[in-house]
Image (cartoon, rainbow over all chains, first blue to last red):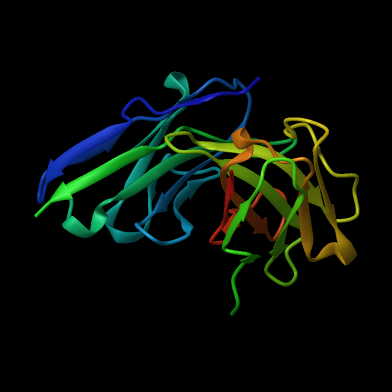
Length: 114
Length: 113
């Protein structure tokens, strides 16, 4: 069965620090990749997605992620975090040509201190 | 436009009672998903509806759980004879097609006493 691993469960940073959240998946075929974010008190919403093409994907609010097929990874990055980035971040992977049901990682709680 | 809505937002019930959770997806979205989110855990897939196809029920944890989607729109998740371990946030999501991004509702927080 497909699995998604997010290595960091809790991350605490100061404003202006750089962020990288790891995401690895186990499926060897073609995949669709997503990062979702849940701000305090809000719905889960899409941050960015990768289906094909340029493996460096840019999303909202200055976030980007790089798909490295050989490493089965889709790490999320932001050069300089803000207090408003405090949220829960979830990586999700779905199998193209399969059921398309996304498998989610356990999530990473990010706290940014002002 | 309107997003995914869920009702009730909170539900407190006694062990052994049945509960129904409702999801109104975005109009025109053919795919609908139910997930369960427990504290400190990721999203646990429960069931998936795609158009008029038979639902994928592979994530339902027991036969106490069931769901239906009427007219390709509104969905109801039913949990019979609730147990304390059923306490969680139940999330509904819809997508335009099965391979698109998902739009999530606010969730229903279920507490079983």
